[in-house]
Length: 106
Image 1 (cartoon, rainbow, N blue to C red):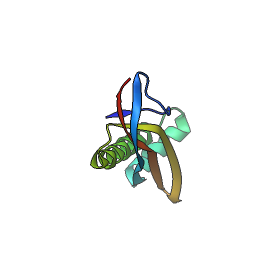
Image 2 (spheres, helix red, strand yellow; image 1 turned 135 degrees about the vertical axis):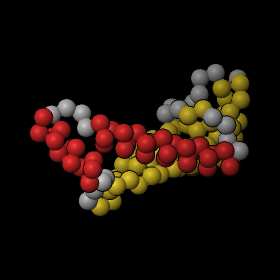
Image 3 (cartoon, rainbow, N blue to C red; image 1 turned 45 degrees about the vertical axis):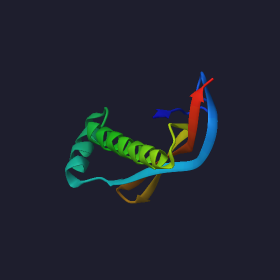
Image 4 (cartoon, rainbow, N blue to C red; image 1 turned 180 degrees about the vertical axis):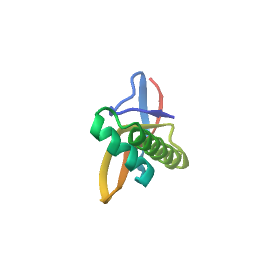
């Protein structure tokens, strides 16, 4: 499945628009990651535990969106966007959304 942030796919024509598709994941931090993050906060630098947590959340959200699009019969998703929000202290939602389409060669 092709995913793009643009509203077109180069060299392809949108044959049919199937509608909005989305995927989300809500993740909470855990005490082990928080302790390691506090140490990193003192010394500075990237907090790898949180980077990994967000990367996993992105991939899961993308997989869920792809699945929803495939169930509609799409072979591409255009205008892909990410959004995130804090649900509660220590938990965040990552949402990915786009427009499911059927594309063909021009």
